[in-house]
Each structure stands twice: as structure tokens, then as C-alpha cells.
Image (cartoon, rainbow, N blue to C red; front, side, top):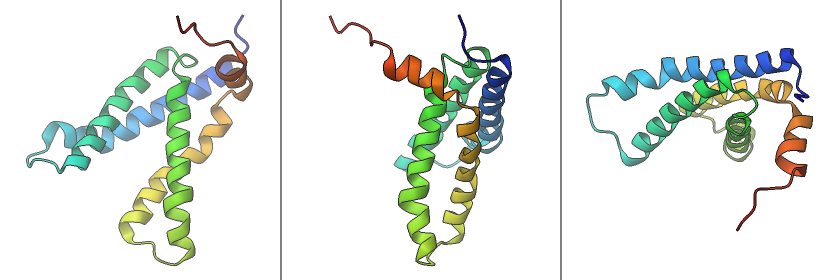
Length: 133
């Protein structure tokens, strides 16, 4: 039996769609049309984000099975905001580039409202894991 309401599943789909559209507008054009070779980490980041957006397409069809994607998104953005952005902001050292990244990361504030935390606890914390052998 599915213990997550249909409304919550549509909310999850909206979060996946937000990621797909956001990365589709910001990342995919540079992946498809970049003319100059990327620096190592720029290439890694762009390709990882492109892959993430493709996986989020699966979240539109399987919103509960793909929940680890949203948890990862919530995790890395929260950590970055706490570890990088907040200390710079407190010390008055935020530059324009960091402000832009922080602004983009703040969208993660809506994720906790869409994630079905009881489901996460029941299926990813409390439930027995798969056999090791």
C-alpha cells in the first residue's frame, strides 16, 4: 500500500520538474553548444548536473523511487550554504558570483515541504537493507 498522498506525489513531481527545467535552461545549452574546452572541474560539474537533470526526468514517472535524488540535492545545497555561503555572508565577503550561486541554492528551502519524511524514514532508515551476501 502506498502511504504517500497523491497530492504529495504531485508535489514531488513538481520538484523534479523544477530541477529538470532549471538545469535544462542553465546547464544543457552549455553542454550542447560549448565552443571552448572546459577546465577540469567545470566540465565535471556541468556533466554531473546534466546527468542529474536526466535522472530527475525519471522522478516525474517514479517520484518515490527517485527520492534519493532530491535528498542528495537537499543535502549538497544545504551543506554548501552552511559551510561556504553563510560564513562569507557573516564576514561581509560575499562576491557577486557567490551571491548568484547562493541565490540559486536557496530554492532548496522548498524541498523539505515536498519530501514525505515519514516515507523516507520508513523506507530508507527503518526498513531492513538488502542482503550483503
